[in-house]
Image (cartoon, rainbow, N blue to C red; front, side):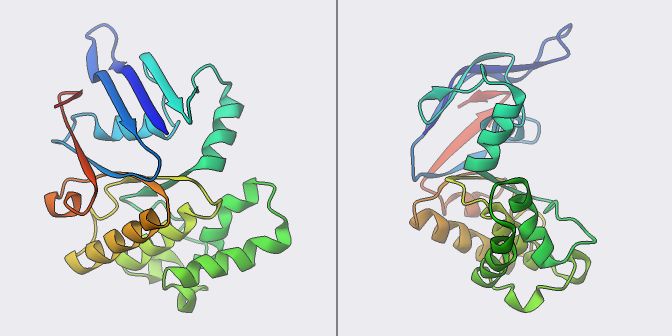
Length: 218
């Protein structure tokens, strides 16, 4: 489903700092993988490229067998919106919006009928145990609750792929376990998941671990 072929990402071309260096990787449909490595090794850069948020300096990236970097920015945006959901360490929720509004937000940029948006957002909130907090804002929630809202929002447009960047990094151990259980449940339902994590115990809960050091897969 996802394939990187000899991808490199270079910053500061004069000094040629390689955030990624000749990385090749395949993630099959329905897999749940973790990506590990020391700080600054290129984990988040790789996840951003997989999520079409960044482009490599060289190499190719294939999504569902098709190369994507010949596409226009508008086409990449549409592809990302329709196929990929994101979960971030810092949640990235809109602080003045309610739980319901945060979950509904991605759907407002699609062709989903307006009458269906809020009922679907409420259904997702209930699925992730947040049905009793629909009118609360993120500032009124715990970290674990915010991440549950972020997980629900990631599913708003019914993606086939979830990319999670340190989704348990700001959570206590119980909340971390809860979020990992939710991700496993999504994977059991057929969702493809790639997760960056620094926690070996969290990585043990995935099917395969990719280790990166100095921009290269070990």
